[in-house]
Image (cartoon, rainbow, N blue to C red; front, side):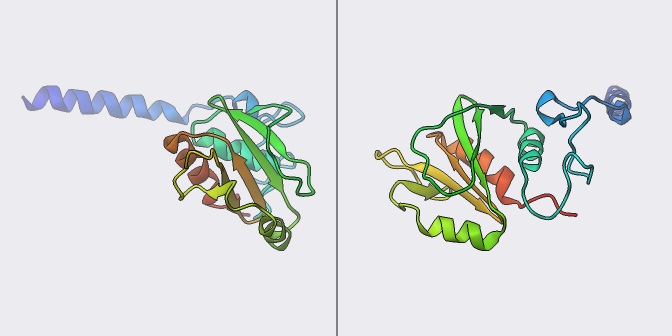
Length: 163
């Protein structure tokens, strides 16, 4: 009885050892020059302790999501910076990157709290949009799925890539 278990454990350990092999970055995580746009401080995606577009893409990719750039999302407020808009699992995520935390907080103060709600609040029949706020990022996610809302907000609310 112990030998089959031991053989399975050895086989599993050997298979896990292959994780050290280099892998290509997913297409959404490619930098402008075609190289990986990692959050490890490369010029394509610097780690400043604040959000930037490539940091958002990498965080979503690392959470198992594939953000696909798109051009529009209905019902977005006008907040100043041009949002980066993605399709995630058939729904839209708009991300506004502000110069600093104070600018993001100022923009949040103008939001209609009946239309835009935090991920921790349950949605109602009114069809609210989920707000994700962390550091200099303000995101709007139009999913009605509690699981999708939680996954996206958890991925971003842990904070920006640190230096």
